Image 1 (tube, rainbow, N blue to C red):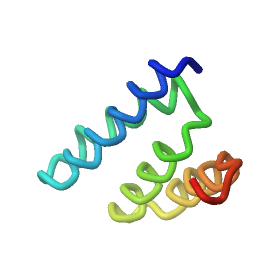
Image 2 (image 1 turned 120 degrees about the horizontal axis):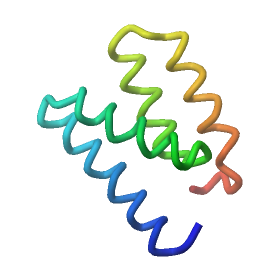
Image 3 (image 1 turned 45 degrees about the vertical axis):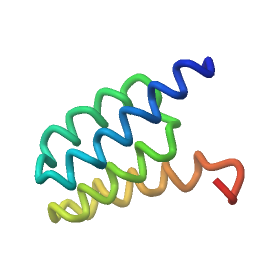
Amino acid sequence: MTTARKKQSDTIVADAIAAVQRGEAGAARDALEALIAEDPGHAQAQHVMGVLLLQSGDAVRAVAHLKIAAGAVADPSV
């Protein structure tokens, strides 16, 4: 992934978090789903999606996303 694309992906995640804070969880999920479809190894996107799913009561799908996020992080300090 290029540096520019990583910054764009990180912006999508930040925007999704802001959407959740505004009460727009559906918009956040849509943005994260699109990002994850393009980059399934994006740890932060997987993590945020997992948290959103857990908050909505979908623990099974949440755990799947959280496991991917945990496995995607190569550097524990990230």
